[in-house]
Image (cartoon, rainbow, N blue to C red):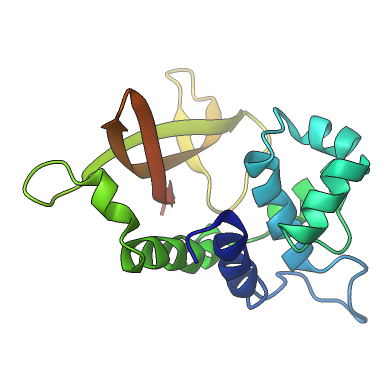
Length: 182
């Protein structure tokens, strides 16, 4: 289960249970699961951007990996991927992080990360993205300048288990949390 194909299959199984946030009269051409797995593939296959993913998704090698490793039947375009993933509640992705971490822990994969007395080291960092004076959503944070101009933005905190072993840095993501203004 600690192989890349095994972990991706576990994630795909969880993603298959995430409901599509949109209502359709008939099933969509590309299911939300293909969007979620394609989004994961953008990072796993090291595409520097969604546009690069879009340009390369039909290349035979990339298409093969999307199908066999990521279980994507119909890879969406970058625009369609962005539009559909923007609607997904980030909290619905949490079970995938938890499952991968549990499999890694059960498979004794964390032992290589033990730092002191059996503990692991977790590194975290926050980042901001989507900053706009006009585009916003119900989950946006807001800041108001001294002149009264409103800027909408999103913030996220991510954490990884880290280790420095044999001059190599290893990381396991333990999740991310979007910070929401209430």
